[in-house]
Length: 386
Image 1: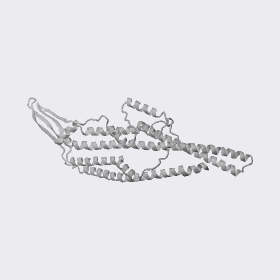
Image 2: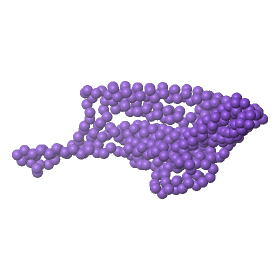
Image 3: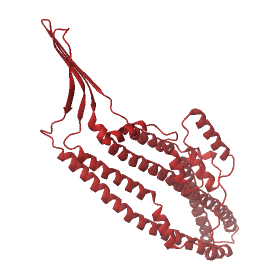
Image 4: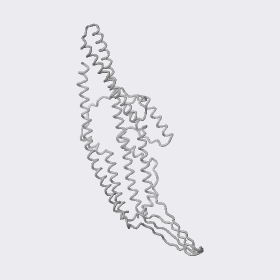
């Protein structure tokens, strides 16, 4: 039965048309609305670049910025090729091993000794179903990991976008303060020269102007750094990026923690990745235990000629296998067990971290909302009156 299964698996050991990319797209579309593309040919890359150029022609909102990053970020494009590597391992695991041909030719005073054998590694056929299942789990893990990279890039781009817009607003405000302070300092200089102000009053205005110049310089530096950070994520020069002039308005309400926590935990891709890796290692441990004593068993037809060249060949079978004389496989099994237990505990920690990080993220989200709302409704109106 294992041999029949192996032959069936070997017949299915081919590359898929999409390379596993469709599964990545389906996973990411559950979380974001943007399109992801994996351009493999020159024509596909040109089409992708043209789409990015069109998007850059207008002021970017946050959703457009994320779309450009997903189309143009080269680190993400490199991550997509992990799918090709993993699928190649899966296909290779389902391929029949090549047969082995061996031959001995000896001659002495007209006597010949010729041995010929054509053998197959039968043991690899027996273990093929397990090997294929292991690589299939790892391919699924790679797909989840790739989807996670997409979502990480989308999230980092969102944060970089909002930071860039916020620093631009701060820079404009600092520039207004600097210009106002400059006018006040000039007026103070004239008032002092005319004898209407004393030295202390003039110095106070000059000090305020000096502080305003410093604040503007710092704000401008933060803006440049924010734009460059966004530029790296989008994969385009910062001078080609034009953003909206202000941040979007605050939402009217915030989500409750309980449904947010449950949904976020169920959809954690890093936890799914860890579980798939642990499952693959569990199966790898089983395969290691199976092959601890013998992992090569070759069998096939053979023929031998001894005597004159015209004598008939003796036909039979050749069998070859390893003898576990020095290595009983205990070290390999111990290593596999340790790797599995390491992954098992790491997966448990990922689950613990996930729940904690969700609560922490919600607290940050709620606190930022409350602080921003207080600034908008209380602090800013008072500052405007002053």
